[in-house]
Image (cartoon, rainbow, N blue to C red):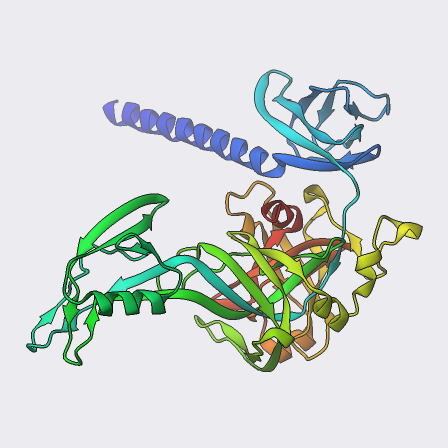
Length: 443
């Protein structure tokens, strides 16, 4: 009897844990399929359909957002069942809340409804040279020095940390690593005070430089004050603003986002493509042309979700976008012929799409498949999973390669997002960012 009782007890535990697990999974599923935010064009009606397994009550907290179901009568509260469609009508621009209750009883979440005007941008896909100056002198790491007596020492160990930004030397502001090197050597072997920015906090540290065998004085720290590379311009808006990469520029050694004060775009030429292999991403190889005559624009922001700034007339002329200076509004008011609408988050869906790139030497659109969309991802630059399906692009690059980050994704005639990362185990697949997330980062 004890054996049978124990069996039923364990069976009860299994059933209980199974029910709890199903409840947790159901809650997670509902949270993923219902976006935390949606966008609606001002004075327009938008249709929605959430694949829910049960009925739900929606209630609007403002007269500016009216709800509707099959009766199409505007209301401040409606009940929908399963994947039944419903509508939202938007009034004046602004941000509003729509509450959602499961079974009409359980408060689940508030959906932020952003009422916006129709937004346009030109999807670009052109490669660009990037030069970014760090805001301070970045400490990459520390290392050993051989002193004039032949002994090894590491003066900065435990004092300077990877990711520190040196801002001043003995109270004197510094801008470049050359200024730091000159200041250390001129100071001799006396103790110095460095003013740092560490994890957003102001810190001062003291250390003694070491005289090396060549007679110069050094701190024993590897430093950097700029970063260069090749990326892809995603879009140019009607004011000449640009977004690129879809992810931030991080230091190759520390892995941290480079804290930048300014930067520039320069002309670049792609010379070849190195295809990726299992565990190793491919890359675009090219040359960046520096100098005033090759200046294409200004970088003003480096964020986790892209770099942003303004292109100049040279860039607009090179890419046939001179119309943009005359852009005022839709249709007859001057929207450039290359501009297309920006897709709202909820409009981007799994299915076929296009990727725009100039890896072949000319800007072309290639077939891709959006496999998954995560509207609520905490990692916004990984809110889509995409797969390259175009045989021509696969033959050319093997899939997604370094340098293609920022390539615009177009779906249903709208700018839906941009490529951001490649899967190391499958170069044909990678991540993308939703365009609304990228635009928000650039504000």
